[in-house]
Image (cartoon, rainbow, N blue to C red; front, top):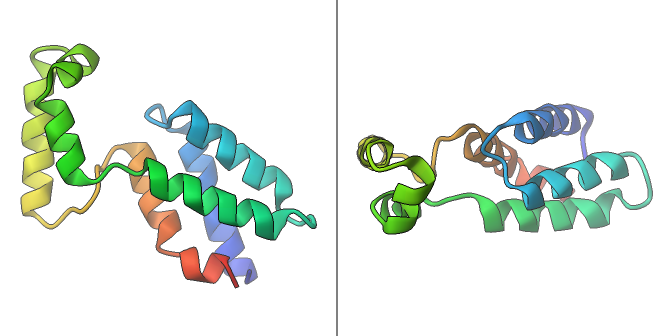
Length: 119
């Protein structure tokens, strides 16, 4: 992986780890990847990390459906869930493909470098 790509992904990975919306599984995968950078495990961990990121990024339609569900109301609260659903619909209308929470935003940026990460 080229140094500029590595530096970018390391910075975005740190943002991901620090994001309050990052799942524990994704956070653990991010930390494992960071620990493997520069070692013989880097290529293997990079593939695992990308797979975890692809599995965990939330598509915008999934966010809308979740926000409008009983589960969403339990997570966000009855009033906030309506705001989240409307926000998701608004960003979808503007072209968003994924949730724009801090974790998903970092993941989306990392995944834009996927092919370069695998080189």
